[in-house]
Length: 330
Image (cartoon, rainbow, N blue to C red; front, side, top):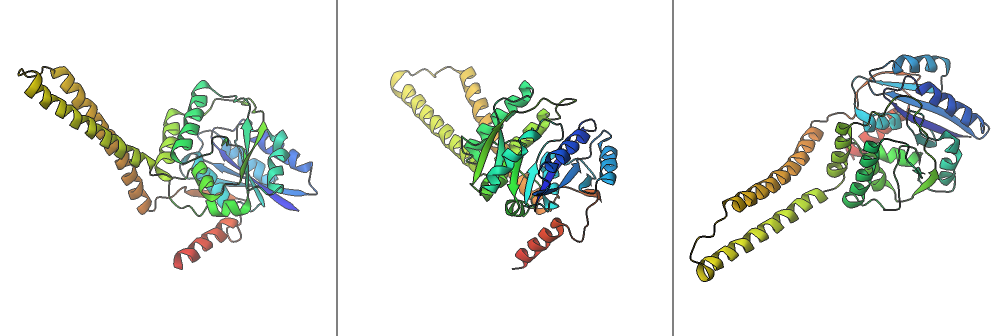
């Protein structure tokens, strides 16, 4: 019998998480002779009553395991915590708002049974706000350009992974995990499964502009140096344009007109443009340096306040931490 671990980051979902966990239990019971399951729900310091809801569920069902953060670490940190303590043969990452179509769970698992490493939902239509749709499109294009994501491969929040892929992913110890980058550097054997996304059961998205910007910066700086190369190219192009313009002014002064070429406004515009380019490049370099500094200081991906139904002595996370220590000592 194989085991499926469901990793669910929880934030603002006190009205929906009970439905999500009930649906998991009912769906897995369809093939209870073939699959067992566990649910790892990670409370990302949610401001609502979701932790109390989760503890009531976990007290009744020991297969529901809980991790409670001491502070909000955003979805990537919550996912990494859940993956660290996952013990299933297959690990399914999903949302807490009921939008992930659980009726297609076996369609998502099937590619793993056929030998693929990762399978992800590919929605024919996104049931989300215009703002979030815009963020999804920008993030998709950014990952294609910056970290080399295949154009025909869609990354969504509903995905299934094999256990050995998860073990490789959680070896990443830096404080800026980015799931798309971690998957792309771990395996190329990923497939999409077409399905319909659901409407939210309750409430509104927590995907704010700040979180979207943070996601983009993680993609830019954690898994690629292309932004630095782009900055170098922009600097070279700007310098060449400035040099050519300087030659043009000298030639105009010597051979075309003896009168100084007027153009205070244009000169100021060029100076502001070049100054803006320089500041942008310095900002990108500063972002890299800042993240290097934070990584050197061993800033944690997450801080766990308490856990429920998780045996610290036997969990997969302890095994993975020992593997890390052994690798570092070699």
